[in-house]
Amino acid sequence: MKNILLAGLFAITCISVQAQDFDLNWGTVAKGTSADALYAPLGWVNGNYYTLKVDGGDGFLVKFNKELSLVSQPELFTNEKSFEAEFAKVFNGKLLVMNSEYDKALSATVVKAWIYTLDGKPTATKGKVVSKFPVDKSRESEEVNYRVSGDSSKILMTMDHNMPNKEGAKFSVTVLNSSDLTEDWSTQTTVDYLDTDFGLLSSAVDNNGNVVTLAVVIGEEGKKLAAYSTRAIVFQGTSGKFEDREVKIEGKYISSAFIRFGKDNKLMISGFYNTLTEKGKSKGIEGAFIASTSVDDLVSLNMELIEVTPTLRASITHKGWLSTDDINAYHIRDIHMRPDGSGYVIAEQRAIYRNVDGNAETRTYSFNHMMVYGFDSNLHIQYLTAVPKLQSTTMSSPIIGVGPVSIYTWTNAKTRMAYKYNSYQDVDINGTVYLLYNDHRDNGNALSNDECKNMTNKKNANAVVVAVGPDGKWEKTTLFAGKEVDVILESSSCLPVPNEGFIISAEKGKEIQLGRLTFK
Image (cartoon, rainbow, N blue to C red):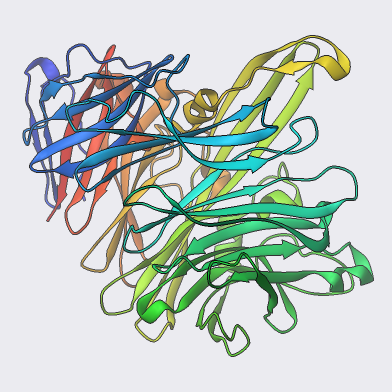
């Protein structure tokens, strides 16, 4: 691929960039938008492209035509003090927005839903309460996570309560019907593990409303490490009753994993493993795995493993600033499946560091290298490779009060801002996986983490694409150098378009500009 410099081309309203392997065509600068706002792509509907814009405490539905020029951006009214959105998706030609907040009178975290036409008009005067999670706010977590079934008919909401001290682990599960937002079933469950030893890894819901939650039970260093196990909490039917089953790789422990329902409602499980020894945890993952099974079984796993080679391990080794647990902390968004049963997995090493000092809370979000592995229709892993990358964002928020009466002011908007220029997007085209992200402009073709500079400032960012071929070999191409052309990629706002490329969202001065990136 060729490196492309767009300097000087933005003087006109619509530009086209061509190279041997792709086309990048820009729409006009969207006047009246804000580069300080946060955008969540919603996709194409009837030839128009939609994105949700959250600017301060206001929400807008932004509409672009097929040339990616701005058409309208009506404000979305909620009858609340401010607009927030944890979940947004277009169902049956209407926009569904959901958000949770703590209700002191109910001693519960309440999830509300709003439905809008694609003209931005609400279908009701106020939000509909779709779920209530009883929670003791003073001692439990209240973060809600959302997943959608394969046919989009079910919406799964889960909450890990993160119980304090040495209490039993507790989490809540609710399944909604997306057609009318009625509750299919709901439960709050306590399992027979101390919360300090228990953590949810991933959850999935099938088209019938059955739910599987994957969790890890952590063993202690030394001989007690044998207590380490990975559990599948299986909810079948609508009763809320569950079975606790072990997902086991003999002699290994699973350090991170992801689950989803695949073809014929098989449960797909994929992630990374380490060797289980009496000496404790090894530093760094030892291999990747993928498996399929029936939720009625979970013992007869059709499992494939691939080891991390010494060369690959050297490329992802850091200079000692990550702990063992952080090194093993990989985030997997999905197990990407093709119609023939083959697919790929991308895992990004992530870490969040939190510090409370005086009257401020500071968080650093790190988004590091990506592990990519592909598998064929028989679940045989064809390759395992790593793409070096270092990104981080540090932000602070004030703390009001002192001691036990302190009020932490960290908001969901701040968390979303940490992702704005970081992480990546991916798309699969004819067996080649394309990764889109911001890289430090001095990184060039760095082949290891130690060669990478950390992208901590958007002014140092280049928008790049890495193409990972079916053999695992990859190549990096610079799309544009942000500082030189005053265009900054907002990676979190870009949309993968299957078998085509990406809709790119970028800051152009104080406004935004969309582009269509198409791979040949």
